[in-house]
Length: 438
Image 1: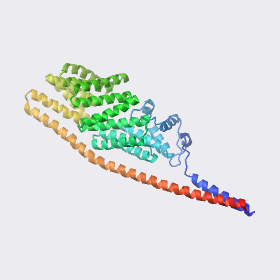
Image 2 (image 1 turned 90 degrees about the vertical axis):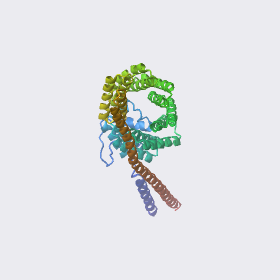
Image 3 (image 1 turned 90 degrees about the horizontal axis):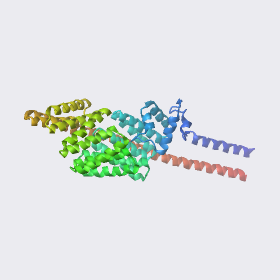
């Protein structure tokens, strides 16, 4: 009777131990196991979860391409309800890998809308969850995307810091998947672009060429089109016009294969600019005109502005003053509407040249001053943006250190829990041995 009582106590003790150890676990092996469990124990109703299953499956194989989304991902990016649901389910299951992807997708959606403040917030959250999952692929992705946003905001130094950190995370991981190779290509392309902005053309060329190597390895038509365009642009800035033309023609070839009207518009403008610099003005005009037609078809205000300025430049050089003024004023009206200060600066510079040709030197001087004023404004904005971005960068680093510290604490607690459980199991075994011997 006494033996049975002791044995019953041991069984109860064992049951309690294993119940405690398993009480905080979630069934997160597959999305289906958690579709009715929310973060606050509320039910998440999903009528058709096949798209959700696909998203979770893609997170495991890193086949969610944020840089160049396929048709399926583009459809999800347009649906804020689906993205929100993907985030909620990932959060409820503590699936930090999927959650990082979810926040990156939300950030990408905001990037497309040019809502850069919201995009930075989501990419920051994506990075935090990449740290929690200790996933090098996702760290590189979120850091790269923050670099993209700050580059678009003309915060060059901050963007450079993010791109550099993304490149370091990718290279130190020694991972050679297509996903990581794309991250390395994007980092190199971003760093090359920033050095171009800083007029460090030799360094820019180095990073652009490294990026193109990875894009060719991946066989990405879009990546190769952008890579050749970037290298051509640097050769043009270095005054090596023949080399520039070769790379821009290669870029046009890839854009023709993709039938990208947007890409072709860029290439025609680039090739037209080279012809202008070679004094082949009539050849340039035959490239600028279809470039404007393509830009109008795309509806891209930035490239419509650039195309009109290029045609205005052509007419300025040909002394077609009235026509030149018309195109330049049209371009500046659009540039002022969308706040494109670089285009406004260039427009005033062209107007200054026109007035100088007319021998209206006072007007030429006034336009020249306005052009310089916009140039100074651009420089000042970049400086102020950098100072503001440093604060955000500090907050992210602080959060990263907090997460790393939390991970260390959790690991210590985990080891203590394992040691305690081993001790309890040893005691149970000892009691069982005593019972058997007795």
